[in-house]
Image (cartoon, rainbow, N blue to C red; front, side, top):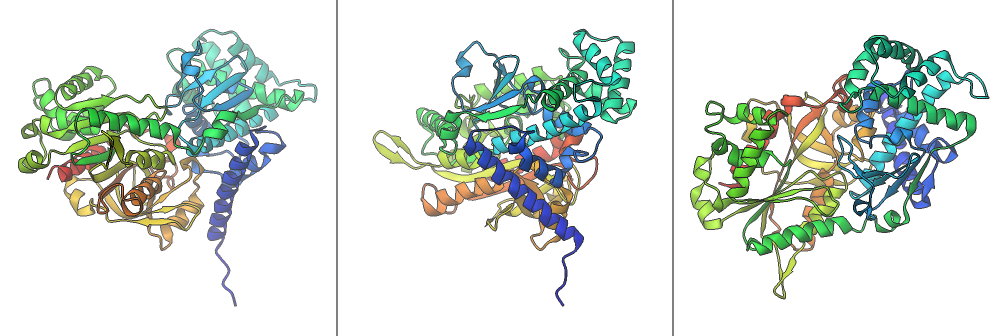
Length: 562
């Protein structure tokens, strides 16, 4: 008798199929050039997302409005997008040289332009992963907007409830509301959203900005307004993909410009033939590790290591960060702001120019003197963009008529990831990356190990990491399957497979870099999607992320300089 799969496993399979359908659908819509998210063409995306019910989107499949997921999404989309019927995804098509002012979402670096009262253009320069990310968020947004409309429209002619009329009056007044006016508006909004007054007060505070204190009420109103226009007047919202974007996607246009600029600066500084160590990280941890102890020794004489890094991470301490950056620029660091559209800034550290005797980590002065290493730090890539950027960076460069191969000795990847058996702030050391939805797997020898970090007082997990197509599409059933299966998955992220694929092709197939290039991967946990209240939508890491970030950074630099 054949053993039937458990219901949990069946649900995991359903969820996997839903993700696969979403990606096939998104590619089809992209090739088609346009679609109406709440029309027939958007059916497959909506149905798949509702079947999937990702953790990050909370109560998307229920009648009540999802508030944490809504905050997560609007922070990653341009301000005012909820007011726009037409959303146009474009390539970099010259809007930066126009009268249009770039709108950059608080939590995603992408240039967006409000063309008129009805249209928002979003520049796509980071590849398919960015398109998937935006379309998933928009689908969530439009599903939520129709929940609102269905609660307030009470006739085919478009008559609305008293609650909606009162919300509309509050928003259209265009002023900062008094406490009494705001609480009256929130009471009516609570009836519309199916949420309590206390929940809405909390959300109102979370959404508010200095320039838009009533942002929460405005977003709810406009989401409902456009959904009502769709339901009553058939004025469908439309997403289009520009012809130039469809033509350029996948051709590494931005990655090539980015990499060529870095290599031209390395050539100008006579660093091309020196041993190069590439680190994918943020723009502060390597710089702070190398320069903060000396730059701030008189300002903060009693602070050391992680206490010093926590002080620097405090938003209010801009002057301290500027002091460290000034010291770095004077003593061996070159900063390359991105001008290619990749949104990936770069720092080059000429290590022999740095007084390493003042560092509070172990270094080998003889190695530095003899080898003269160079560290190139690139900011985080986004999904598939990791392949494009590293693939282009590792290609040889033409100098004085000859082909010069970069002397890349190591590539270190540090990033944030979701953890499956731990908590925010823990560290994950992968032994392989597997690609979600495929049989592709990338084992490698990681120069970092659990033993390297054990003395640092952080919890560390070793095992396989899964590279997902999008963090916003994960649900508990799939993640539990990964965790409990023989894949021994400890966490999920979006770039590992893409980095490793580029490294392997450059080192083992093309011969662009040393076949035995050292690789280091380490991630710190930004969330645990299996724990209610610990998903990405629950908020940032705060100071919890400081220690694991610097534990990893210090160990990477220590290995490079010894």
